[in-house]
Length: 402
Image 1 (cartoon, rainbow, N blue to C red):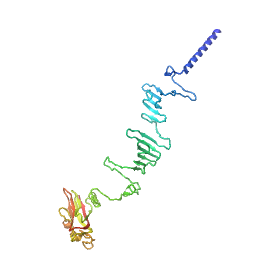
Image 2: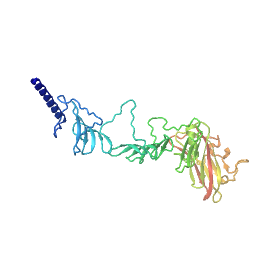
Image 3: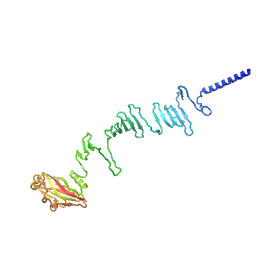
Image 4: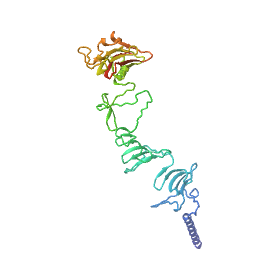
């Protein structure tokens, strides 16, 4: 009986020693710089349970603290970089080197690599519906750019620099109007600055197409104060507020001549005119370009201001270098506003009758110009003693056939 009691007592004492040893092992704190392994020979995993479990790494000292994932090919770490007061996720095991993601004390998040958003319908939201500007800034070497919601104007802006609302390049407002170069958009496309349409192929470069029930003008050019200077109506009628100038011509009559040259060759006759005054004493009325063929039907004048020479000997001749009065030789009497060539004729006109024309048209009534090698000109000359006044309009009726 005594032996049995001794055996039981010994067993109890052995069990107590084992329990105390185990508890001591679990509660033991590792000395400084000692690594406690939780591996195949110790614990495989750690579970923090309870109502408010917490794992604290560090003791408020001025040093980095980290968790290192010791991988086969690559290591990664999650750490507090104490020198920068940033929480980092990085590559390797050295805190502060090769970071991939960082969060600073202001909760600003920095990424150090590519960012991919996966999923079926990935969405990136910037802002929390607050009344403030939100932006993406592109921090370049020489120039910065930004894309931002400018809350003050409710515009989406692509701009230069990093200050939202300044130096805007493209503006998109709540009406889906687009502004280029200006502070806002006043139309579907509102451009402040120059516009260049540089064609890349032989095709129409710019088209303004009217609405299906267009009644307003198709195009309006205006001054900065809103004054219209050029208008194209829905029917194609053109209105010009100022003087219409065309390169290569000196008057609207020359424009008619040009139109006839390119569109009405061999068509209806064209009437051109030129003003001739007592000074200068000579000049050109019309030019027939080398290679063209003109049929001159008639040349006549309308005197608008009486010609005045000492001794009433003014004279006007119209011809060319081969015959200075080949079309007309008008004496002083015919160069007055009261002159009437025949009964019933309007006063001030001369050259309407065939007999009053020069040698070029007096016989058959027509003259043909076909310059070859150089242009031909129809010229005028004023003669008389000391011309002091006078002005007339010279009219040339012709058909261009080549």
